[in-house]
Length: 262
Image (tube, rainbow, N blue to C red):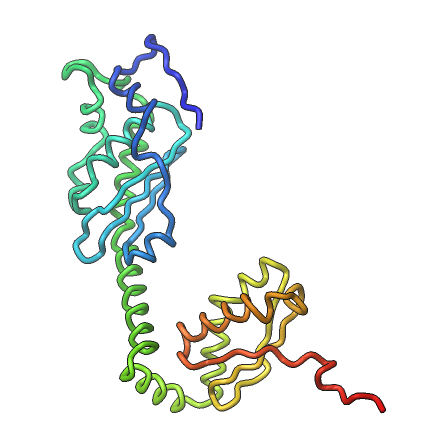
């Protein structure tokens, strides 16, 4: 990525210009990364600046902070200082941070502003910090809930006690509820992915509570992956979200069930 060169005649401090040229915290944090680590991801975007904060929901400690902007040197420098300052702190300390204090850190001398103090980026950063604070409680609940679900899934798939409990619950609810849970999981975890590639699937039946027969449609019908990677993906999602002992089988092709001609 090419960085913008700033003229020394512009009304910015040398420190601001240097940080804007070579920021260390520029980048993005994705939800998949947060999920894998069991952390909460809080994001806020104002104008052309977006900040990502990765937080341990148990301690509220900031594990990482990154930003992305295409809005010029002021946003870049303010975001760089903010991300550096919050790393290793707790979310509550965000209430003690304001853009004026960030601007002070960018000065070459205490009595010489690093930028015009009426620049609109200052107010934008104030809004952004407020949105990060406001958004964290909901993100924390989501992260803790996802972690609890993963722990429960692991317990029910990988321990004898968990599998025994899962068996009792699964066969107690009956086939109608079993199919409903399967369809819910497929809608939430599978069908959207298939639709992106022009495919689809439907449930044909469930035998003995464990053998699910499906029918592919669209691009999935006859695709080589339908009996390989796609089938494994569907089966893994159902085992994780619904019942650990489900196996998935595509319906037999018509030529396999048609009697041979004499």
